[in-house]
Length: 139
Image 1 (cartoon, one colour):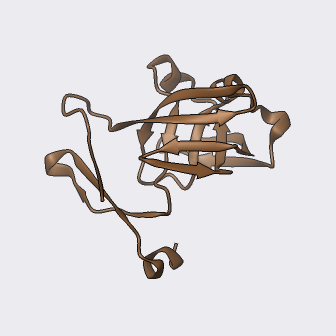
Image 2 (cartoon, one colour):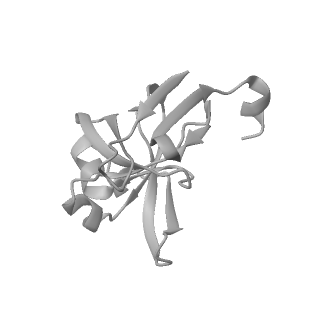
């Protein structure tokens, strides 16, 4: 079991991550987003790691919390390190997160499917538990 504690003075749960790409490694600060289907990173930040729309596997769209639709692209990264896991060949969405980027946030982190998620919001703590084979097969 891994346990992460969030900064209690912040209204937004942030996690550290690293993307390994064609131009090396890039440290990231991501919003921990339990509703994100995939990890999504600000497109210019992806470019610093060597991934641009020219590397896209697919064009994608998302609708965020504000209800606005945004077009982006999907890439397969060499490696994403987040929440204590190294994820080889991670699928990542590239989108324009200009407002978040100006606040020092590089994007949104999804939950790696290798975990189940008991969350205790009263303590601002997150417990990540290795999912059993049975749990993992449902995802």
